[in-house]
Structure formats: C-alpha cells, structure tokens
Image (tube, rainbow, N blue to C red):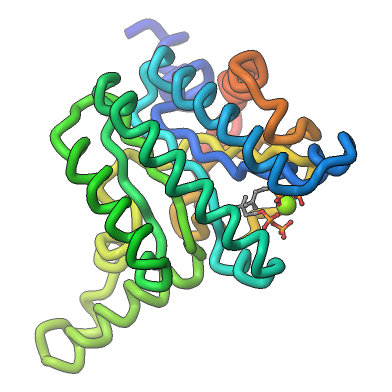
Length: 247
Ligand code: IPE
Ligand code: IPE
Ligand code: MG
C-alpha cells in the first residue's frame, strides 16, 4: 500500500458511502408554495422516493434508510395523518413488485403496533415478498423515534438483568446495539436532510454517532438524482476521523 493509500484509508476521504439515511422534509411547504393542500406535497414526495431508490440501486449502496413518519408526526391534524398513512399503503401496494424486480429487500423500522391492521398486514406482505432479495436494503422508518428505539433495547436488557441472564457490567455498546434497529446493517455513513432545517427530529440517534450530515434547502418533492449525487460528492470530500488525530 502506498503511503497515499494508507492515508486515504485512515481518514476515509474518497471512500464511497455504503449506507445513506434521508430525512425527507419539506413536502408541506412545497405544496403551500404552489397554493395547494399539504397532501399534494406528500404525493409529489412519493416520486422523489422513487428517484432516490433508483439512484441508490444504480450507485450500488448497501442500504438506504428513509424517514417517512416520526413518532411525533401523530401530532399533526388527523386528516393529514390519515392521508399520509393511506398514501403509504398505496405506495407499498403499487411499488412492491418493482422493488422485488430490482432485488431490493424492504425493511420497515418503527413501532408498527400503533398502525392500522390493514397497514400492518400490507407491511408484512411487502417484507415477506422481498425478504430473500440480496440487492439494496431499503429501510423505511414509520412511527419511528430514536428514543423509542433506545428505550425498547434498554427494556430487553433490563428484563435479562432481572432474570439473572445478564450482569449490568456486561452491558457494552454492542450489547445494546444488538437490540436496536438497523443492527444487522453496515453503519450509517451519511444523513441527508432536505427542507432547510438543521436538526435530527428524533431520527436514528444511536446509529448516527459517526455519520456525516448534509443539509439542503431543497424541498423533498424537488429532490432528484442530481441532488443525491451532490450530497455524495460532498461526503466524498469529508475527512472522517472517528476520534483519531488530524493530519
Ligand atoms: C415531510 O414533509 C414529510 C413528513 C414529515 C411526513 P413535511 O410534511 O414535514 O413538510 P413541511 O416540513 O411542513 O414543509
Ligand atoms: C421529520 O420531519 C420527520 C420526517 C421527515 C418523517 P418533521 O417535519 O416532522 O420535523 P420537525 O417537526 O420539523 O422537527
Ligand atoms: Mg417538516
């Protein structure tokens, strides 16, 4: 290995991301700007999801994780929540064939127990149909909250401690990490957030410990392959140090 390569390996600059997570924000404002109802923006957002997935496949990402509905989004007007979840059912039903055709494995993360039985059945069906696919892993976060994720893991460990199967001293990063969402995947390398806000909004809290963040003013319905590529190019210029020294 040349010294230049050794250096590259050390700071990881120029190494392709394997796992990208996206906070798809700005649908409502996009619709508002056009004088339309918010749901119109969500509908347009489904097209952006298609573009993002297709880019992820052609770029050979290992995993793409999309934040579709947060554990806090229930606070929105009932009408919007119903319309959003209905849109999700419809998109799942129409897209699952296409996902399967492209060898994509669908994985829903979040507390699905609060979703309608129809949506739960629809999720199960889509996950089962694609479960043996070996291409892109498409994680969609629905009724997901980073705090919910961590609490769920902690509860499992607490039960093991209570049963005497685990000693508190045995709890390490990997002990808890094994019970969190996305535990079987490569770490998240890059988080993209559209819509101009620079916050995490209770998305993957634990999992993004060393991810790179890229924020854009572009609203989610305007997200396309070019924007995705721009985010990746910015990522490729980053120097990831993981706590080690600078040059
Ligand atoms: C993102 O767009 C989609 C969801 C959160 C479901 P928003 O609906 O948050 O759109 P803005 O942020 O109000 O524009
Ligand atoms: C984050 O967007 C959640 C999703 C994209 C699903 P929000 O629009 O809900 O986030 P806040 O309210 O601006 O933090
Ligand atoms: Mg928003």
